[in-house]
Length: 459
Image (cartoon, rainbow, N blue to C red):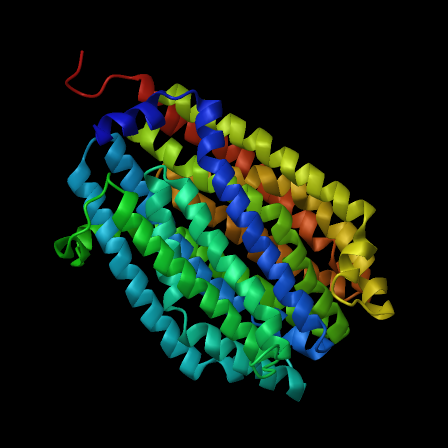
């Protein structure tokens, strides 16, 4: 019975309604996640600009951990959904079990990083002692207590793969709300709790992740009937892990590239003023309000495309991709308009000084011009991953962030004019969009269109 319901939903439900029901809970939960990111920085900004920089400059390593977790989850998601589309339930169970095993191993690696790396990481970026000390304390806690992050993201991906996105929304939402509630209590020392400053922000962050992980485990065991959870599926299998990472590694590398990009841009901006680095950190917090809903849309789209790829349903793949692109571009357009019209008000959320406003207003207005192009690129890259061609997504990310963005930003910085550095972002996004258009045509011709042809041995 559960297999029939699964078929009816993923293979039969009208694409528009299916994409809405799959994506809307994820978009809502991602918005809550974005809210927690902004609230986190809002409270930290009230401590000092050094504290804000300490949290912002932690982003590359935090993003790397998230990238490993999400990349592994993307690989599991694509393999699991495709296996369900093929009615290969044993392969689906193996994908889920090995995914949980990989999440645990990734968390152990993050603990090692947290014990060895944070102080040297900050010293490589700045010699301002307050930033180094606060950043080291913050990042050490986030890394060494990251088990919740990795388990939560993997459990959410398992729920997404089988269409249980409402439960993903609940797990993410409760985890984020836990963080939001605990932030002011631990940062400023409300009630019986001592004032912990930046350390309190880190504790609140990992507490929210642990709550999300606990809920994710409970929901998978209670409602994810399409999957069977048994110890034998947790035993690592090279064949399964290879298939997971054939899709997941490009995503992990893409996020690693993003971390390198942020590190490089921070170094360039520090050559002007540490306020410019604070502005860049704020931009990343603000952009999450726009990008997170699109990532939520993608999380709903990927299992639909992967399932119908396994079922060889060409038309549903094309319909899903088309609707996702239109929705993403509309969301990004709305975000661009807000950033263009209200940059000073957005920066004011973070106690922006006059110097920060002078740098930040033109920065936001320049960078946000790339949003519409980014919406198209994000959906295109996720489509490639869902179809098992994650290397193409990796190629786009390398060109965008390493081949174009960082070199262009460096060259523009040589002019001595900070406002020109921000132009590197729309320039890089336009280059990536051109690549996406070309690769979309290639994938349609070589992967999607042949689905209409009979398999060998069929009439």
